[in-house]
Structure formats: C-alpha cells, structure tokens
Amino acid sequence: MKYTMKEMEIIKNIREKFAHVEDCPYSGKRIFFENAGGSLTLKSVVDRSALMASLPDNQGRDNLASSAIMDIIKKSKLKTLDFFNAKNGSIIVGESGTELLFRLIRTAILSSGKGSVVGSNLEHPASRSATAKWSKIASKKLIMVPHCNETGTLDIERYIDQINSEVVVATVVHTSPVTGIGVDLKNLTKGIKEKNPNCLVIVDGIQHAAHGNINISNYHIDGYVISPYKVFSRHGYGLAWMSDRLRNLPHENLMNGPEENWELGTRDVGSYATFSDVIDYFDWLGSKLSTTQNTSYEKFFSASKFIHKQEKNLTEVMLHGKDNIKGLSSFQNIKIIGGIENELREGLVSFSLPDIPSEAIVKGLNEKGIRTHIRKSDHYSGNILEPLGLKNCVRVSMCHYNTEEEVLQFLTSMNEIVHL
Ligand SMILES: Cc1ncc(COP(=O)(O)O)c(C=O)c1O
Image (cartoon, rainbow, N blue to C red; front, side):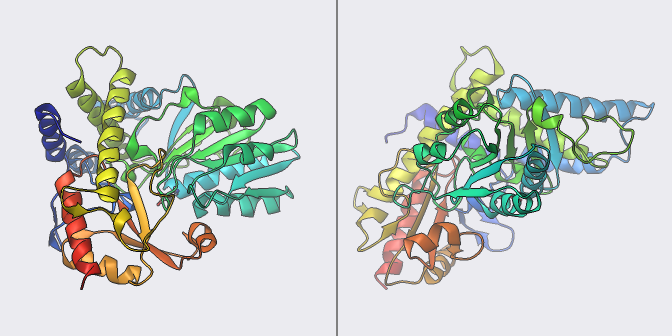
C-alpha cells in the first residue's frame, strides 16, 4: 500500500501518543510485535493512573473529592456504553478478563434453569475452563464445537447446528489470540438467538478489542468481556458489558445491598478513568480522519476502519513481502496458521518452520531487537496447535501503531535467521 502524506502524519501522531513505542526500559531499542500479550499503553493512561492513585478519597462521602470520583465513574460507564454502541445494559470492572468471564459464565450457568451449554474449541482457556467447571457442577451437558483448522476460526453453521431449545448458555470468542482470526459475531449470534431466543450468549472480546469496531447493538448477546491492558490501557482490571437480563439474574452481592450491583468491594476509580482515556484516544483518531462526523460512535467507527486498513497492510507485507524483501509465505515449508489469505485475520500472524525450532526464532528475533512470542501446545494454546500437529509456533502480533518499516525489518531479520 502506498501511504498518503496525511496517513503518514497520522501514524506519526499515533506513535507519539504511546509509551515505549521504540524502546523497552529493560532491553533498549526494540520493535514491539507482542501486542496480543498486551498492547502499548497510552501516555494519557500512564499519567492518569498516577493522578488517580494519589487520591485517598472513597465514593459515597459528602465531600467534593468523593463527588468528583463518582462523576468520573458515571461518565466513564456512559462513554463505554457509547464506545461499545450498546443501547442498554451495564458496564462493570473486575479483577481481569479471566475473572469476569468466569463470573459471567458462572452466573449464567447456575441461574439459567435446566439445559445444556455450548462452547467451542477456539476459545481461550478462560471461558473453556469456566464452562467446563460450572456445567459439571450444575449437571448441564457441555457441547464443545470443534473449530476449523484450515481457517483458524469457527464454522458458524457448525456451531449453530448445536443450538436447540435445550441450550441455555453459549460462549464465543470474538478473535482467537493464537490464530489471530476473527469470528463473524453478528451472524453467529443472530443464528444462535434465531434458534433459541432464551439462550444467554457470552463473548470473550479480549483479543478483538484493540482492533476496534465493537458494535454490541449488532450482536445478539448478553455479555462482552475485554481486558483493557490489551487495548491501550494498563494491567489491573477487566471490563465487561452485561445485558439487563444477565445483570438481573441471581448473583453474588452484599446482603440487603442494591440487587443490580455486581461489583464486589471498592473499585479502583483509576480503572474507569483510564478506560475513558482509551475512548478519548479512539475519538481523537476518528476526528483526525474526518471532520464530518457527528456522533462519537461515527468517530469510533472511522478510527476502527483506519486501524483495520493499517493492520491489513502490515499483515499483507509480512506475508507477501515488499520490493526485494521476501514475505513469510515464500519461506520453504512454512506453516501459517489460518492460511495465507484470510479476510478475517486481525493483525496477527502465527507460523512455524519445520527445520527451525520456534524458540530459536523468537530468541534470534529478540537478539535483533524484535519482540515476538512462542505459543506452545500447553493449556493455553494446545486446543489450536495440537489438531494442527504443531508443538509450538511463533506469534507475531501487530497493532495499528506499528509501521511497514518495522515489518520489513522483521522480514530482513527472519531471512537472516533462516539462512544462518
Ligand atoms: C482471547 C483471550 N481471552 C482471555 C484472556 C485472558 O485475559 P486476562 O489476562 O485479562 O485475564 C486472553 C489473554 O491473553 C485472551 O487473549
């Protein structure tokens, strides 16, 4: 792709907004292609975290500081509903994405009456472990739909085939963190609810969130969980949207307290404040791209379109190369998970080379200042790698703030490692 001057300027401005774009405080200069392990953090989030951590005040007191932090939480919840394009429902924060998935899935399974549960082998162990544990305790049959090895995603029809009037809970991952391939959530969840409108649908959106375009009013779901450290915020909290129906099911809360409350104990106001900064970033990016947008959601949508285009270009260059630099697809006998051409790829390429251990590639790249990650056939990634007959793979996960030059440097390094 040939970038316009405006696009080049926007990418430069984007990079200025993040901390540690080109260097790591421990290892020095590096290219960051480990975004699926945790994205870069916005500088605004870093500053806001320090400010909020310095405040001693708690909510619910009759003083100005208390009112101010309650206002931050209230406004952030409203902004997040807007960001997700959710016309109703509630936002909560919890300990992590995993913890929230467990809590939503546990509540759905324990409070949904007799029936069965459907999930898929594409999912992260967070949701697979929750459905396995709580289906057993609730004596509900659990059906796991195999994903498609060739495409690295779900065959939607195959999943929907398993839905019937007996299914009370269904779990779905929006994008796999191992294959990097997304799921057509709109049509999948539409199909689920057409067969059973009463089925509670809970989505793990953790890997998808950094790629933008979350549009809950287009999905037919009851829960959507993300981990803000994977979408430009920091570690220390997870965030979830819940439908009114899910929120009103019996769940843990304080005796005689407000029944709709899901948050257990005092929340870190900084989590709400920093997620608000993430939303402001999408808003800023959307405004840079077009001045004719009226609503915030239109701006988020423009930002998401830009993110998608930029990430698609980065993965295309990574797979096919540019000028005289060879892309990954022309490496001899390379196995690219999810296939070379895949419209649902979201900024991530996982691959394995039969003659070079993935560990050696990740180490070699690290020595050349390029951070990637090995995924092993363990409890995290065995569900994807084992059916492919792979013991491990190299995961290169990019984000819209990465550049074509970084990809070309990666490819040059890969060519050197392979020809050593
Ligand atoms: C798809 C997916 N689900 C769940 C998780 C777990 O998230 P957390 O580390 O916030 O608990 C991850 C983390 O990598 C993930 O990629």
